[in-house]
Length: 148
Image (cartoon, rainbow, N blue to C red):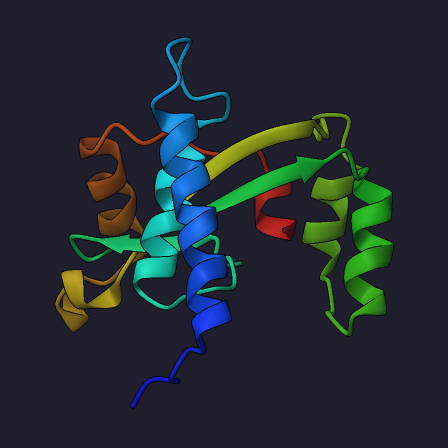
């Protein structure tokens, strides 16, 4: 059951909705990002008043995760991950310390994770997963994406 609104609360909401309507009808156009307004209003209609912090979505059995780089160097990644309790092997550390490791800043990468259910148990091997990714024309991301 929803909350009952007082007359003052209803009036306050009507005034806000009226102001949005007034701004939408301006002859020089709506002064704010229409897509942001649309998302905000849709969340309000659904009763979701907090903006989602979810940075992933699922589509056709594939999970997509957006990761944005922050310029962390390989050595700093080692320190950050170990301080959070991750145990890094010598190979991982050598990759992060390699001259080939080039950190970026502000680059957003959409990572695709194929769900295990897309493959039978006997076919769920790296070779087949990489072949599927190649068919989808996915590229291999920068190594820093694995740290995020």
